Amino acid sequence: MLAAKVFGKEDLRLVEVERPVLSKDSTEVIVKVKAAGICGSDIHIYHGENPFATLPRVIGHEFVGEVVEIGNKVSGLEVGDHIVIEPITYCGKCYACRQGMPNVCKELKVSGVHVDGGMQEYVKIDAKQAHKIDKKVPWTTAVLAEPYTIAGNATTRGKVELGKTVLIQGAGTIGQLILRMAKAKGASVMITDVLDSRLEFAKLNGADKVVNVLNSDVGEKLNEWTNYEKANVVIDAACTRQTFENCFEYASIAGAIVPLGMSEEPSQIAQKPIMQKQLTIYGSRLQAYQFAPVIKAIEEGLLTDEGIVTQTFSIHDIQDAINLINKEPDKVRKAVITF
Image (cartoon, rainbow, N blue to C red):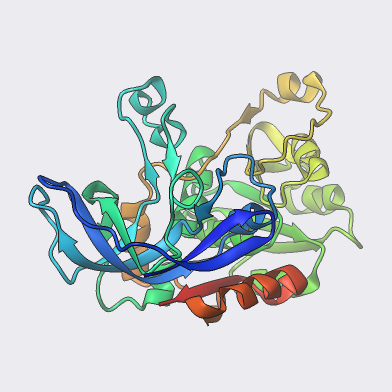
């Protein structure tokens, strides 16, 4: 069967690999992959910039498909079920797992990063990674469940809720999904970016206020919007050194900061604003227990793919998809690979 595998920096190849088979007395299922989204972290792996990835690796952690084989110890799933795949496995016993944070388990493995992912025709997963989704949901919508869980985790960690003001730095794909999630939870949202096109789309997504940082002072606009209270929750989806440092200025007293970046570059943060405002900084990695509510919201039409999935490519054309993302990123919100 066909798989898209990264062997080294900017070395992506379509290769033939063996189709997976079920083990004897298995809790596993085999899934025929129908669609897989290309995430920014996949692009980082392609460029050799993802510090967590091991190579060679079949990439892809945003994938959905149809169950085609079931192990003899599996219950609750049937051949033909449409599923969203949870791309993490964890021990369930370590301190993080006991704290309800399996997404940072000491033995965490992520599909497409530590183990082979979804950019292949068939995958074998443990049944607990399979989340059923209504067959009426198109594959190109279902494939957004995983990135929506990232938004769900970030807003849950930051305690986004009715009546709170939220500042999202960065109106890229994840920023737009966080915007939709925050609005669904009842918050008022300001979002910033350097591109007017992204901000215009954010308006369509329900943003209460948009700010282009190239021609406006974010601090001033934030003060006007909040009557000088500033943002109760600041989510950094731009993930630069400067945007992270800005979080501490933009957060309100008793506010929360949720950084999403994975840069190893040090930032200069003074202690005073953290102490004076009694700020809380919530790291947010992947997701924990977000699939069930996200899938329900997708099935009910509360979370959609409208305007997010901008291109689809056959698995045979995955290099073209990556080239487009690299050369014209502003034209791509989410590119989806279909099988």
